Length: 289
Image (cartoon, rainbow, N blue to C red; front, side):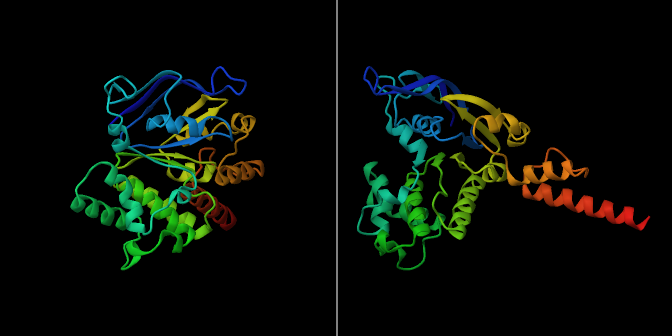
């Protein structure tokens, strides 16, 4: 399943005093099996771009293609996009509304016109994926859940649609540290099970830790694109765009400023551990001489 944006521009409230172009001339492919991070400062166009991926917004100019077909062309059934691409908004728990967790998760599949048996199967499957399958949980009110559980219940409602591509807008925002880690591990697990993931994030540490490719948005355009290690080799350029680098990159720069032979291409915690261990062993060997 391939999603492609061709020369996509989106202008809010055109021909009005409030006209604002959020993205312009964006060309981007969402490749099957990748973990793509969308990064950029507030107002750079990330969320607008994400809402084009699942057809929620229609381009002012340009096309969005699903396996080569224009999703906004006459005669195209946009329900196919909703089945293929699941969008998890920032703070999705604010959209919970049903009496029970199970009913909330079942809302999307019901709109697909599925049988009761199929809906029940999908609800159980989705709740298991997000770790909310303990006895009695499905019959609870979603408003009785903790913040982290509510977030997972909202994600389950998207997973019940069985999308091939999962788009998440700041999925860990506002969660306590443990719930945040649980959410990130859930997303990593879904990716490992074959989901294509597109994640909007302000955390460069999370991008370095999970993404296979990163796209940097600046003033509605794609300013940089590549593997995280390629992106983070340009800290000055990122700083000019109001962005940061992972904490590990900062540590490496500090060590190099102190004259220590720390590699310039470390950006994940495991790489930093290996580099520090190597420095420690080298220093120990030098001391033994």
